[in-house]
Amino acid sequence: MNNHFQFQHLVQFYETDLMGIVHHSNYLRFFEETRVAWAHQKGLVDYQRPESASQFAVYETRVRHLRPCRFGDQLKIDLQARREGVRVVFQYRLWTGETLAALGESIHVPLDKNLKVMRLPDEMKEVLEKEIWTETWL
Image (cartoon, rainbow, N blue to C red; front, side, top):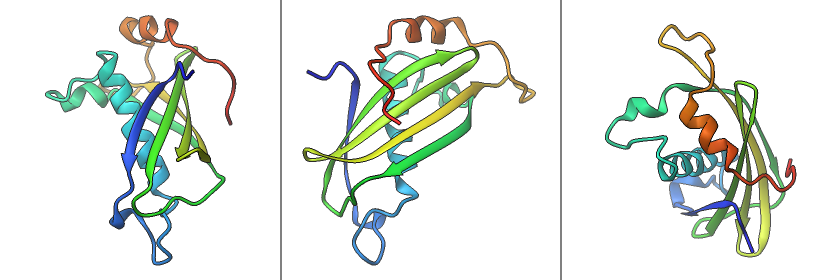
């Protein structure tokens, strides 16, 4: 049983390269879609207020590509999140069917209006305290 947040994405033709394989740059986009959907479900992002998603800056990203994904693949992306001080760490497992195709990680920090790192907002702390982190995927 999967206790992590899960998001699905159907690979579109424009996301592929001339070989019909998903271009490597799109994996970060898939992870972002998953992260925003997670934050929306947790009440941290309001689609009516785009600025609600802008206070967290990307600090670091990593992707390990294991198997190619292709046009028409139905992707499942698992997400887990945890707090490390002011940093928020997200890890992702991207599946095509039953095959693990990629692993990813993104680390984010909260910024104030002057683009200075600030304390983690209380609502984010509360959400992260309830998150399940079973193992390190990447």
